[in-house]
Length: 278
Image (tube, rainbow, N blue to C red; front, side, top):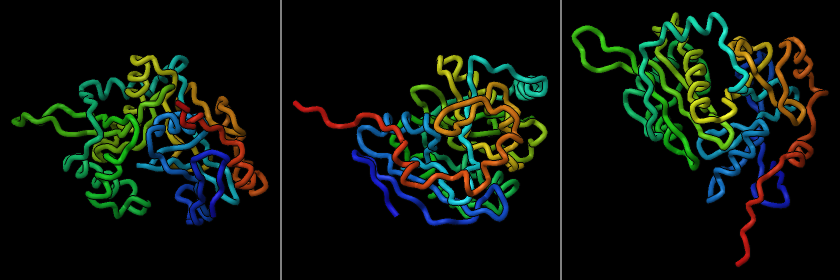
């Protein structure tokens, strides 16, 4: 099925498949290609409207029975870490951050496999091989970075082991955390939380107002950690708003809350990417 706007890009809808977050639900995505000279501007514009990037595709959930998946971002200027998050920062104070170009390495893939096997063995990425992993990291038409976090070397060793990795897009108004993974043996260190906290520090240094976290799903244990960050906003009803109480969003899982695809596409605001006349 395809719907088009008067100007490019074209939007498509995926076939329904089981939802990875809510049992008994089916997911469907609205997506468009991310390519060409204006890819960065399109990514910036659609990220502000709840879309996410995966390689050369921008997508947003568009399920027939549910609209529980809500894009989430943190207002950098208003964020204050909780007591628990300050402890997380102290526990990981010896980690070293390095930002590199989006280039996949064997060490990254080994950590990625350990992370998946431990935490998402039944997920959609469980069978990803090293070539697919490299595509996830490297196939980006926009400004992206791989943020690596290394730990102090063990006794007798000089090499710092990789503790966590995040593929991050640099938007015109923030940092978008495309995908992160970490050492599952360090679960007590709350590395997932630490990587978000460090991205908030990075965004503050770069004077960017937001850190985009992906989707928050009320009722999903996998996504519950995102609601524990202060100054969190969700994209709902065509606008960004404070998350408020999580229970207030339960009605979003009702099928009558879902608008038709054509209406969803018609409301998308696109950047002006028409060629200029000489």
